[in-house]
Image (tube, rainbow, N blue to C red; front, side):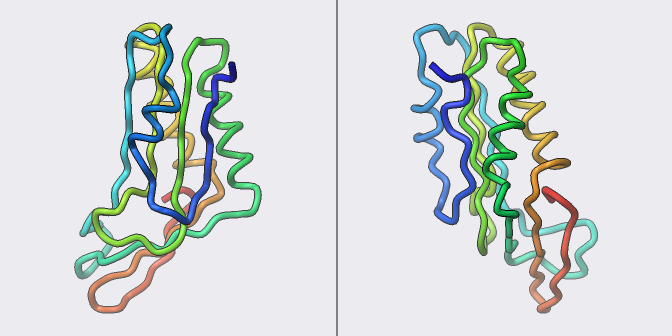
Length: 142
């Protein structure tokens, strides 16, 4: 059994149930999730945000897997994580993480480490699209 059961960069809509099913395990007494959604505003935007356009480096999926491995470390957590690319509208899911472990503390720690590292290390970039047509690139991982 591998601890990273799903690590994917996808142009398709992300499925929360698929991630939960991927981490299903009789050893797990805790399951945590993180869902990152496209919101309709940004502190730097002059008008409403209407979409985000994500692009990824060809190695992004392998990098995502490595990030998940590092977040687990020597622990017993099981991870399913995906990041979507392409054009996402307000409300669409950009990131889904599910972490199962024997105890809640580890599940929360791994889930938080995953999203924080994705934001700083995953070679995925986003271009924010505003209602007035303004487009602005944001840093690595958003």
